[in-house]
Image (cartoon, rainbow, N blue to C red):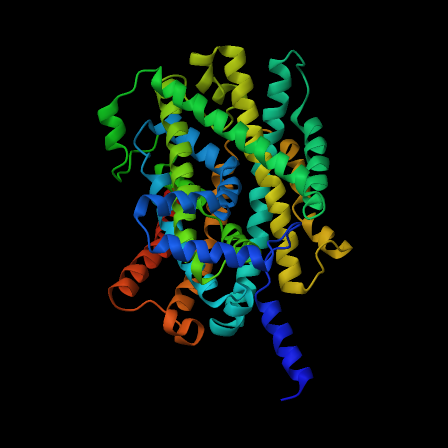
Amino acid sequence: MSDSNHGQERSDASDLQRGLRMANPPTHEQIEREAAMLDQLAQGPLLPRLRGYLSLSGPGYLQSALTLGAGTATASLFSGAVFGYQLLWVAPLSMALGVIVLAAVAHQTLSTGLRPLPAMRRHAGKGYAWLWAASSLLASVVWHIPQYNLAANSLTDLLAACGMEGIPAIAASPLLLIAAIWLSWSYGRSPELVRRYEAFCKWLIWATVASLAWVVANTKTDWGALAAGFWPSLPEDRDGHSAFGMVASGLAAAVGVNMVFLYPYSLLARGWGRSHRGLARCDLVCGMLLPYALATSLMTVAAANTLHGGEPIGKGAAIAQVGHVLGSVLGATLGRVVFDLGMLAMAFSTISLHMLVCGFVASEQFGCTIGSRQHRLWQLLPAPAALSPLLFAATPVWLAVPTNIVCGALLPLAFFAFYKLQRSDAYLGADRPRGLTATLWSIGMLLAIAAPVVAIALAVRALF
């Protein structure tokens, strides 16, 4: 075989292993040292292994930043305000099912080292690959709408709490759009600013979680009813809110099809490979499942303790009304400020990540060079959502519930494609799970596929 053919093969292999572009990608030496350390940890005791894994975690937290947005916040707050503790089981169960599928995605990506879209095109079918890319774009656009609604209303409520009253939410929306464009276009060019921004958002989100924990600790909690709330049950509809609809919204808010697109490429971008498979599973549990379950449960319980049983929370509830969750413990003004900052951080971090997803899908599916004019234009695909505070002013917070349901309908197809890949000998070869492990993984993935389908179908049936 000629040198040119060898060179072409190496180029093709390199291209198939390409992940997200990073400003400071790990060097080959760093990856080799990390892999050697992980191989050593895998032979050692459990606790040192966990400590080593936690020191290297990362992609799971990226998924947490993407999913902890308007959809999650609204589903959790309305669940607690309307149904009390009765729907506490929804968020942890839905995220656990999502983690099962993402663990399969990690196993496939790290076992083969191949980019998932070409792998899906080759081993599951071109139709699945196209629909996965298209649904990731559509989900990022649709889910963008409630993010601006929540972010703009949180920002104007924050300004009102500081004495600047009367500013309409639509006036804040262009500022958020400009900031989001600048941030999404700076990825890969200004790593220090991006790290500072992500750290700032993470601190704000965790400050809100800590404040919610303080509310739970300092308000009357029915611990027996709270424990019972983690057992799946379905309450009767209340105050014009469908229990089926709230369950469907919670299931869809946990894992989005655009998250499933972003996740495997973030693994490849870090240079992770076969030695990182245990680390990836730990990262999903510790960086995604546990923070998500903790944050959503605290939001639900805090809302149940402060809003449930009082004035009914309608679909037109304003951010200030929902923000009273923290006011009973932190004080009216401070509670409102902390709540607004937390909601703003959640929504805005998701806005910027949605834009990144759109740009990356375009570069992967249509060959746009990252950083080019075409790539930046694709990143602007969700930008019209900045008009949502004007178009959907009547539902400043609740809007996330129906958009969750719409986007949740896009998820099962992607899950099924990865289910097919998990059972493909041609794709995984000796790494395809077999025996009891394969059976358990198949059951978990099929449940993850069926859950949103059943919930959405029941929600639509209840609506009509």
